[in-house]
Image (tube, helix red, strand yellow):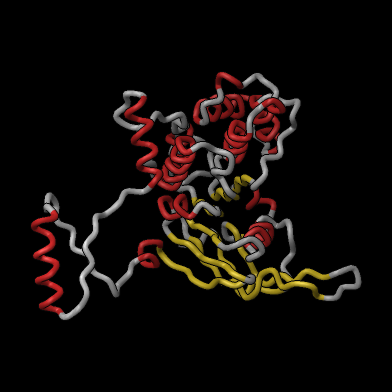
Length: 311
């Protein structure tokens, strides 16, 4: 199967007014991103992530190398019709309502009035903005504006979704809901490329990651493989008291002639936070506001760019 994104020797050098090279933002980037996977593009500020995304979107022309998106050269108009993009900073017309905003972007993609109306209603429900659908977005909090931005990125039912800091400005419950939405989209055949400085978000949602620094990929692979510490082994034994554990530790240390540590596994802070909120609200699980859109389940019958089975 053809990769959704493929770059070969991609390079971008920025120049000053006199065309003198000032910085090499991306250097010899080779990436392959496959269908229906969630790929995390990580790195500190200035590592080349945003420049890479802009080249994939056709907003910047590479200095050297090639990039293809959905089988076409990056920036191809036909390919862009099947791409959804959420920038790091949600830029919305402050005097438009969420409903008007989504209709506006739907018209830019050439959606029919009936299709646009249907998808707008589904997306407003998905991001839990039905109650504020007809209020100007200029009065929204950053988190609410982010929800509008997520809906906008999905208005064309994209095959490829590029998310730049998707959980920026959201509270922990909403962050969890956005991550669940990303996995739902991937299960329905959408390829997701995301950047984030919140590494816990990336760890829990991405299939593969690439870590960039100074314009180059320093590490790439499946999240589980990269995090696996093959030089350390931990035994997990349920319901073992400290009185039972200490003799076992000492015996194992004596037998191996090595130091053996004794500890207890820990949950993540996110899990603790969500469980605490769930108990406080009398829920068995955290309250979910993002609801999968019905049009994501109609890919077999609708004329939609989304492909692949829905799970």
